[in-house]
Image (tube, rainbow, N blue to C red):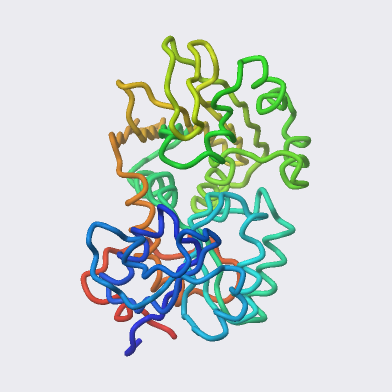
Length: 362
C-alpha cells in the first residue's frame, strides 16, 4: 500500500494509550478516536497517551456518534478496545461491517468466538463479507497462548498433552474483570455463582456457553484456537472454576475494598479439551489480586517426545497485547472478508518499515 493506513480508535481507556501511540510510531495515520467516557471526550489523544506526548491534532469524540464518524473518517481499520465478550462488541462490529471497515479488538472472546458465541460470529461473518471487510480479535493470547505454543509444537516428535497456565493480576484490568473472576466473594458465594457449573458434562456445558447462559474463561476460546491451528478435532470440552484465596488480607484498589484472608481473591479456570487425535489440552488462566510476592507468569509444557517447557516471567501483558495487535494490522487488511480468526493468519511479524509497506493484496 503506497499511502498510510488510516486507523481509528474505539475506546480511549488504558489500552488505547499504547495502541494509538504504537499505530502512530509504526507509520499509521490516526484519523479519529472515540469513547463513551465524558472525561475523555474533547481531549487531544496526546492527553490520553500521556507522558508529555506531543499534540496529535485528533480529538476524542463520543462513541454515540460512531455510525456518523466511521462514515466521515473512512478508516481502513478500527481498533476496538472496550470489553471482553462478543455480545459487548457486537454493535460496533456491525457498524464497521456496514461501512466496510476492517476491525480488530482486544476483546478476549473475539480471538476465537466460534466455540462460544457462534450465532453472533456467524452473523458478523455474513455482514463482513457483504461489506468486504475483515473482523477479528488479537491480544496477548494470540501469541503467548497461541503461536508460541504452535511454534513449539513444530519442534516435537510426539505430543500427548498440551498443558498451559497463565497468571495475571486482576488489579491491572478494571472492576468488571475483577468481579468476573469472583474477587471479593466468600468461598460459599463463589461456588453458588461462578463455580456452580463445575461438574457439568461437556454437551451441556457447550449448550450453556453457546446459549449465553454461561460465560466461559479465556482458555475456552484459546483451546478452540489451538485446536484449529493444529488441525485437531474436539471431542469434548469442560471447564472448572476454583477460587483463589490468600492467608493475608489484601487491599484491592480496583474493587475499593479489603479482601479478607480466606475470602476469594480471584479464580483458576481450568479448561480440559479432548480431541479425536488423542491429544489432550489442559489449560488454565489464573486471575486474582496478587500479594506482594506474586507476578504475572506464563507457562506451557508439551508432554510427549521430547517434553518441552517454556516459561515467561513478568510479561508486560498490556503492552504486549497492544504491540501484537498493531503488528497484525497489515495481515488484517490482507485477510479475506468475513470473521477471520488469527489461526488463519500468517505468523505475526515485527515491523521495521512503516506498516503500509507490509500490506500485500489491497
